[in-house]
Length: 183
Image 1 (cartoon, helix red, strand yellow):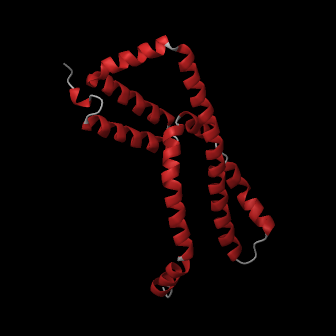
Image 2 (cartoon, helix red, strand yellow; image 1 turned 120 degrees about the vertical axis):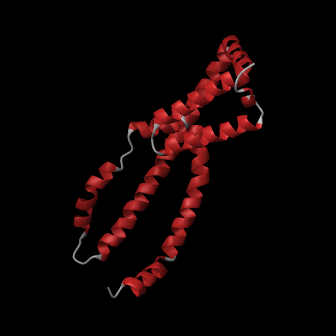
Image 3 (spheres, rainbow, N blue to C red; image 1 turned 180 degrees about the vertical axis):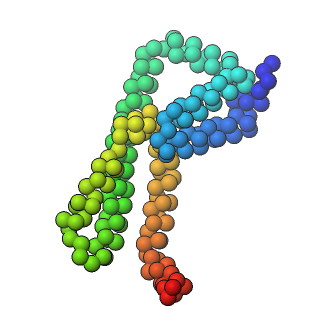
C-alpha cells in the first residue's frame, strides 16, 4: 500500500497532476528554462511511480527491454519530429522578431530627421540580440510536444489581440491626448 495511491493512473488526481505538470513544462519552455521543464517531468514521474503506479512502470520498462528495435524507431521518430518542429518554430520566432523590429521602425521614422542609415545603425545591435541561441532551439527539439501545443493555442490568440490593438491604436492615442495632452 502506497501513501499516494490516489495518484493511480486514471484517477482524478492523476489527471490533475498531469495537467499541472504539463502547464509547468510549457511555462518553463516559454522562459527557456530547460532544467525546470526536465525537473518537472522527473518529479512527475517519481510521484507517479511512488503514488501507486510502480507496476505500470515495471511493465513499461519490460516492454522497452523486450522490444529494442521498436524503441529505436520511436526514439528516431521523436528526434526527427523535434528537429522538424524546431525548424518551423525558429521560422515563426524570426517572423515575430521581424514584426517587433518593423513596429519600432515605424515609430522611429515618425521622428524628424532620421534616415534609413540611422535606422540600420540603431538596429544592428538589436538584430544580434534577437539571434536565438542553441538552448532555445534545443528546448523546442526536446520538448516539441508541449511547445507545439502551446504555439497552436497561444500564437493565434496573441495575433488576434495584437491586430485589435493596432486597429484601435488611434482610439487609445486620442484618449491619451484628451486626458493627458494638456499637461
